[in-house]
Length: 191
Image (tube, rainbow, N blue to C red; front, side, top):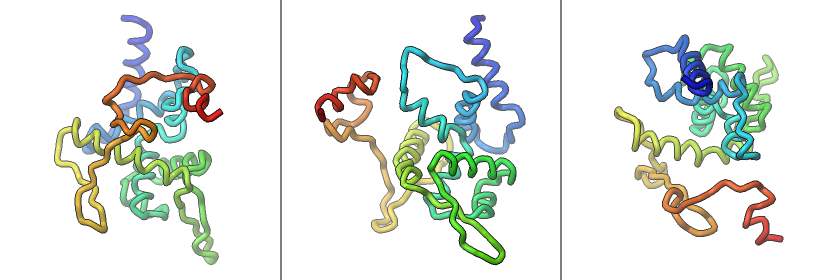
């Protein structure tokens, strides 16, 4: 067994220690990514990877589910706790991380007693398409009866797709590569 395989198995086994097995395993998949902060696995062959950098901000299941709930209109600590069934200490850590990373901000909604709510920032609102694409992926690849997103105005089910704004092509239909920011053709074209 290679050291990389052993490390991966160690990460996976520690990710699922203490897992509440009443929850579908899909809820825990992103927790593996949160462990990257503990193990700091680096890939020097792809510097400035936007996926790795994005996962540093929202790379665990609880943070992503808090953002999902915030997009449905939840703003208060007790609302998040009740919706997610998360212990208060874990929720406190997730809300702090999301505010520190600029995805949510605290706002005072009551002065006596002082009470704060958590609202999405522009960066947090920009995460909605990512949530929708995770959900679309789960509908295609995870078992079980999953809830569907419905457009409030039309009453129709939302079927998200990802389109490249430059070419108009559906993502996943063309080959792509990751290039460093200074090598990006789009940056050269704008210069």
